[in-house]
Image (cartoon, rainbow, N blue to C red; front, side):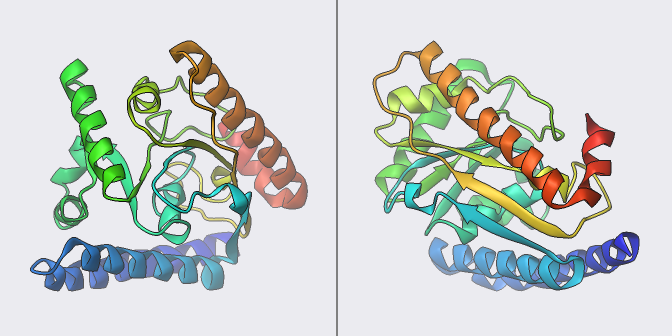
Length: 251
């Protein structure tokens, strides 16, 4: 059944992507917010497909920790699902992404239109400074910025070193930094064709207080994200035992 549903969903995924991505070309002449609305529409379509084809929904814990205003969200990254969930959580999200993604036809064009913050990983200090300036600009416009501190998706149970740029944002941007834990990798694994039914849990944690030095901040961020994620992973496996196979395969 999982394989059959995954086949149906992947057909839906690529069909929905094709229709919406080409349709979004009509929004180029209009202001950025209209393109953002189109992306949000695409996001909700993905949610509906996951819920009714795969039987996969999501729940949010710690909604009281969401900021009614600009903030920097630093989530764990396990799945492609993480790359669009914030369109369902915050008003006007702005993702920090790899520069290479802007080269993807259509998708990359829309990311530019939405003012995604592109990072050249080989750009060194120059790239880091530009990321900080771009983040400050988006925050000043009242937007929230999402950065994956690990830089790429980590299989369930695996820890990757944190990207040092998140510390620069903490120290140089006048905005709350909010850690986020999740267990999406149990259901939509990294580079996996199979999608599993259940409920993804995403937990918004309290913001990290200002004034910490770089090492203190990085240790606090990693401790909060990983500790809460480990708890959600254990809970998810107990709640949905059929995900254990995916967890074991990647650990």
